[in-house]
Amino acid sequence: MRLAIFGASGHGKVVADAAEQAGWQSVVFFDDAWPGLQGNGPWKLEGNTGALLERLTDFDGVVVAIGNNQIRSIKQAELLAAGGKLAAIVHPSAVISSHATVNAGSVVFANAVINACARVGAGVIVNTGAVVEHDCVVGDYAHISPNAVLAGGVVISPLAWVGGCASIKQLINVGEAAVVGMGAVVTKDVPPSVTVVGNPATVIKHRKA
Image 1 (spheres, helix red, strand yellow):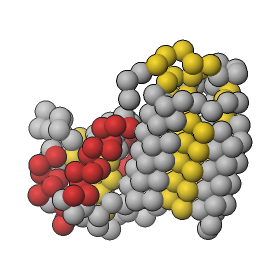
Image 2 (tube, helix red, strand yellow):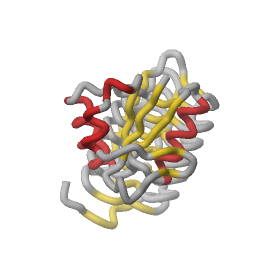
Image 3 (cartoon, helix red, strand yellow):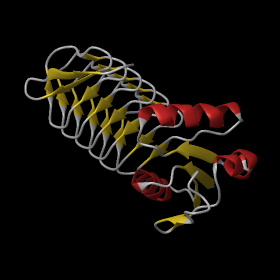
Image 4 (cartoon, helix red, strand yellow):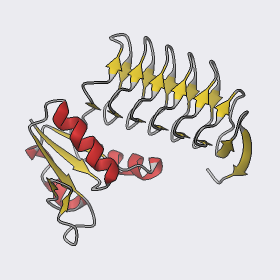
């Protein structure tokens, strides 16, 4: 089983390691920093976007390892349009209910928990130790950072980012492209395209969508 990863970054290293732990036998990187950049830690870098698009049939799966949600969505759409076989990468120590759904292009890292009837969209990052409780919906290209906790029935809209160790109360909605700051405690719905921080979380910034 051969996996191509686009995005030779620190995040990419964690994706590659999770993939190897999950049984992928060969993992190689592609990045537009090539040829100036030749590798990513112990993994070889074999070309840029163009090279990957030309070689998609060489791989059993492909995944985008870019932390920026918007850029990840663009790159994944490009690979999908070219016929790439998008893979979901799940570390073997993650606990995912047989009644939960994780869609293509998403990554679930070590010790993460996704409970019954939760739905994780395409191109999502569920980072190390994050908890996605029952009946949550995590929209496409969202990022749930390390040790963040989504209580039951939370809805995270596409492109939103939940910071490390943040906690979100049950049945809360987080709007599209919103940012929940590290350690925030969210007790009210979060509008689209804002940043919230603190306990309880309050809006500190409005951003263009």
